[in-house]
Image (cartoon, rainbow, N blue to C red; front, top):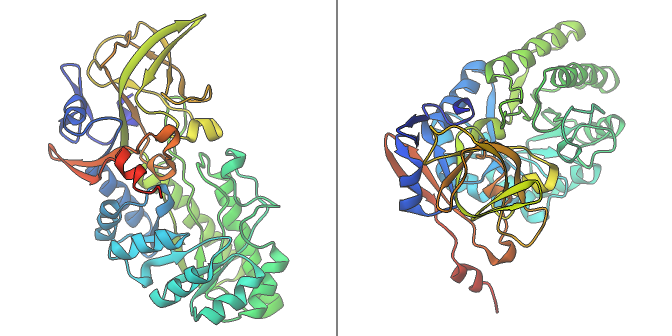
Length: 414
């Protein structure tokens, strides 16, 4: 199971060691639930993208986890930011990421968001026909047109974005009209969804956008200077899930792009990639403390001190995880257990079944591949404050997001 954890994670005398520090020690120092990010893994995955596509603009999909420390780290590795709200834009600027490495998304951008994007000189992805004029009025000079290819990615319907009828992007005929209205637009954007685990749909999307670019040239005399292929590369969170290595995924995109150029006689163009989950998910581990353990009919429930407030993905769209006991990681499993949270919902279920040694109150449960869309989607349901996050490297840990307190929640009340 260690292949699901950050690079270099090991077991020593039953203790799970992440970034040189025992999971139990991390909880002793910083409490639980706790998101632990491994710096070496973050840097390694950023470098994988930079090596695979050295001439591309690679932008971190900030929605995976907007965090200044992570974004500064990625900036050091030459990674920009893909943002979709004014808040995410402010995070990117606070992390020192300039407008030349900023891509601004959003299917319903507010006037303030457009003005802020213009002020930063960011590349703005046009998502509707009415936005063409609004972007011009805001003073935006660099745009891409997001086109919806009508490709159904093999992923959960809640995270598909390229299918016919999607709320994102423009159907092909409307995309052509957007280019007619703004022929100075720099290029095209296409993104078919998240958590992609095979190459077929990604290759189809690249081939389709090449064909559409040829149509733009034929009907409008316009060719894109840039192609943004979005992100979406999936990450395995259980041992039975497939995962495509970053270099293989990017090589497949580049290969299809080259074939498309040749087939349609298109000129080489600037490539933009927007990885999110594939940069951060594997680098993150959530540590919980086990509370009650009880049997109900044929199920033994193991309750932890977090749940759907810090990781809503299992409840939202059936995301699957696995786990081990971070303080007893060398003990053999003696049964199958259901991991639940502490919230007042029957749907507050983190892991439906996982093999573990019999859990006891006070054990540390470690859930790997949780570095994306956990804290980013967290809530304060049941007035439970959000967890802290730490960055570990070389046996040291530093807090990169402090633990929320009940006083923080009460401070919002008037």
